[in-house]
Length: 206
Image (cartoon, rainbow, N blue to C red; front, side, top):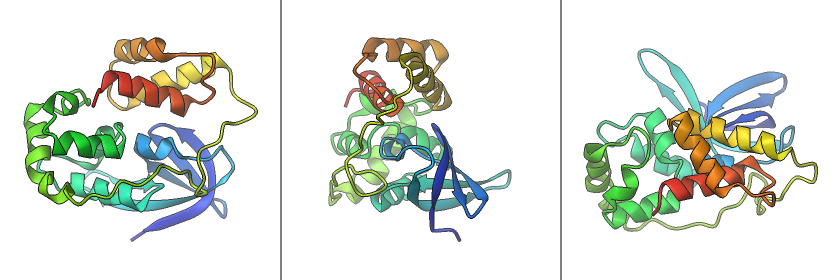
């Protein structure tokens, strides 16, 4: 089983990424909680991984933090929640999801694409007791530092397009994604990850 990868980040298009290790590219799916903390392309990255096998597919999932991988593994044990749905649920930041579950906040959970009322209720019922001792950790990037802005920032149009594409890939309708991004777009935002984070917070209040 593959438990960790260390290599160069060569593709970063939420929720997909690729890590090059000695000329071999590993395709992974990753939640937004990991994308917010990724370094720039071609930089070294360390990812904790989970390998999921089903009758129809094999998929590798990557996480910056071991705690996020632990939370992902807790999610997929919930009845009716598969790995891809777990990635969608983790479009909310982990600490926000934990708070929603502990506070029985159905309204926030059902705003996540693919999560209906019954699934949200199962998340609360099956995970609430397990999360009472959950430790909140500060967000850092793959090098252990706070995420820094890239001095050679892409254009605002490119940032907006990438953010909208990521939201659609997470399960939101194109119109919803476009409106959500438009509401929070600012010339001061230099990274698509930051724009996605703001759009999601606007769409999924805790």
